[in-house]
Image (cartoon, rainbow, N blue to C red; front, side):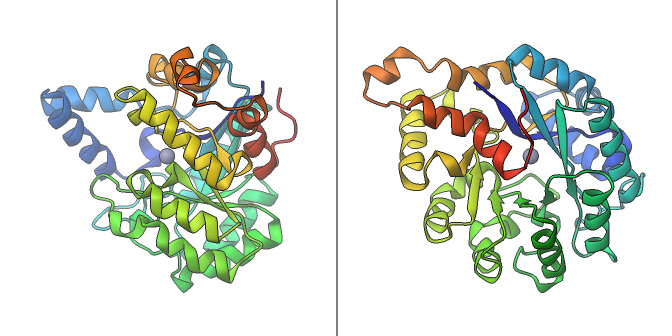
Length: 311
Ligand SMILES: [Zn+2]
């Protein structure tokens, strides 16, 4: 069965503002109870601008293709921009996916408040083969802000989707911008645009689902829902079943939120949550057809992001 990771990341040190790494280290140190110095070393394990560890992880997990969502935090509140200019980061992403042609594709991250942002999208798609735009509204803008509308028009012309981070987020990013309700105007003002609600909005998932029911152009990914599968598996599978009953498997995509190839074991566990559904789940009457799993694990993403037929 074709498996596509519709939501992976690659971040090299210079691709994000220094403040982003500082905050990450602070969070890691609080979570793990380690010194800030140790936390910085852990954070540095995320840095990768080659894609090699990510592809090695895809190989181990039997994942055919990964969509790398490039992100632009540059204009986030109180941040200095990334050391590397955003257009240079786009070029690096292009080089990485070129190097791993057939295994990786990418989505261009751009903050719509940047001058020439629509032009950047045009260039990334037409010259660098980007398959989508990735927005991080949590950097400080609402998806329905008119500043983003020229990019939506550009995406419609280019025939590509926009992926929105949805759901509560770590500092210095702001969660209020990530509520799914702000996608509603975008969906209605651009009914032909495919709007991807990433993470299904995490804790806002019911709001996302209810909006997706009223807006047929919303597609959802379940990236990073491995948070939920471990502790209460039955509840997790029941919830996924319910979501699939409401919007159908053709509007749902598997994704990991992996940063580079970090934590292969966790990556594998998350893939197996769907390729090896525990028998007790089926015995409990929670079932997924092969067709539904095929859509969710790969076919929906291959169609939405026009990945061709990755094998
Ligand atoms: Zn992500």
